[in-house]
Amino acid sequence: MSALLSETKLQRSYASSIDSTGEAISSLTPELVIALCGPIGSPLHQSAMQIKNTLAEFEYQTEIVRLSDLIRLNAKKVNIALDADTKFDEIQSLIKIGDGLRQNFGHDVLAKLAIAKIGADRAQHFGAFEDVAAESEKVDNEKIKQQRICHVIDSVKNSAELDLLRLIYGDALFAVGVFSPLELRVANLAKPGKLKHDEITRLIDIDSGEEFDHGQSVRNTFPQCDFFLRVDHAVVGPSEAKAIAQINERVRRFFDLIFRTVVITPTAEETAMYAATSAARNSACLSRQVGAAVTSATGELLAVGWNDVPQSGGGLYGMKPLSMRLLVESAQEDHRCFSQVGSPCHNDREKDSIARKVVESLVEGGVRSKDVTDKAVQTILGDTRVKDLIEFSRAVHAEMHAILAASRISGDRVVQGKIFVTTYPCHSCARHLVAAGISEIHYIEPYRKSLATRLHEDALTESSEAHGKVQLRQYDGIAPRRFIEMFEGRGRKEAGMLKLPSRTEAMPLTQVSLKAIPRLEEVVVAEIETKNLELPSLLASEENSAKVTR
Image (cartoon, rainbow, N blue to C red; front, side, top):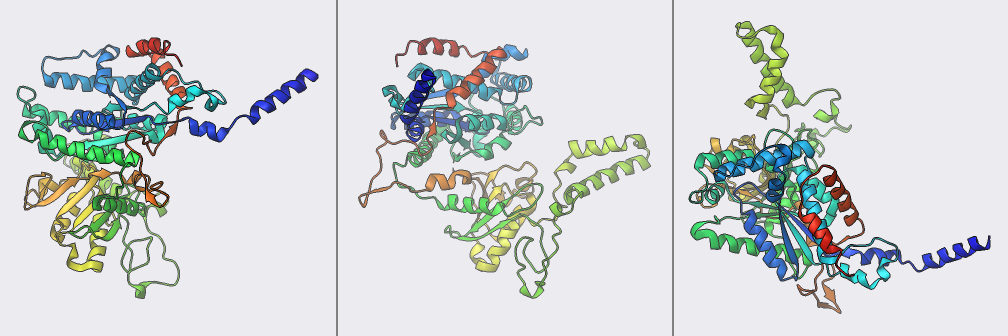
């Protein structure tokens, strides 16, 4: 009994010495993980190098993890030979091997290989982290503060990869979307003796979005990034220096925001896109939420809009009618799709009707037998342009809602103004934006169904060099999803004076605890080992880390 009491007293004494708050704070790490994403031909490698150069000014060690190298190592696991006869053959076979790995081992397998590499590098450079109580009392715990290391993953192509990286590293992960207009990507790929024009076109189509879940799908992954870097010059030929200078300038601003070493306020473009994204959340559309913001030529916000069904009296459901004369005392019945229980999307219903009418006509004409009607309908809806029809939706599109609102409020200030849209405009909206006098259209998410530039090449262009046309421009700046966090101005003042840390002393605003990360990485490593996937650096790193004295 006395022994039990003594043990209890000892436990109480030990517990009283533990500072859980201090423990949590002391485990915060300055580590960063940067995941690059961008369509093929965009200057991803050059961006990785500029990130490394910039972080050196913050006394960070930067390691670049190339997913293509991990794919090469594991080619035998999917029985696909790496064909290096030509540059095209090499790239195409790497894509096939990557697809095979995702299909056989999970859509996020390449991210798991990268995570294992990151964990091994940390152990090699800093030793193992012991997750025990009262860790903060150890002198060695200060090593956590010294772990100024960044891993740049070049590059993620599947949204499952990005999802897993966010799950493991939380806010310490920043996804950077790197983009160049199509003609510049073609120029970057068309290096002498590298790729032919038809090969470039084919690779761009594959990279944009393969029609299966385990394939590359940049168009789905890219919009989820935290920072968008648009490069308006080719990285080959005489414009290379301009491209590198642009990348360097944008990367430097990005890290000054992360470390709060400079007072930086949002650009007009960042403010407008944040407003557009906020507006999108008003939409009750079953297909997608789209937001838009119209600014004057000088960047003043004029109006916002979102996609939803129009209501009698003007405006959209979810807001008061514009004409108060038509506002009835009792609440209007909601006739939007979500309120019609058991009823399909109106656009989908009409597309099905069109496909069924086509099949019935073929049956009546003796071209098709009646017993394959349902299969034929599904084939039309799945494999033809019918699936892309958008004309039968009841919703007013976000761009039109914003233009109508801006015209009511600001009149001709819309002319030569700009519009910021969360999604690339459809061809229907595009022609109305041209007619409204909009000079620039900025967007985040690509939209493959749009025929905007094909139908209106005389009025619209994605080229950064073309003049006299409405410019379609990929958004450049901090993503709306991290707008508040990045521009929140805390800790700028001390004793009434501006006080900002130097680059060598600054800690990132998104520090996360190192308590859980190594354990999660260990689980990932264990899974890789059970699947016999190749990552030779793991063993070497583990052997070296054992020699590190703590």
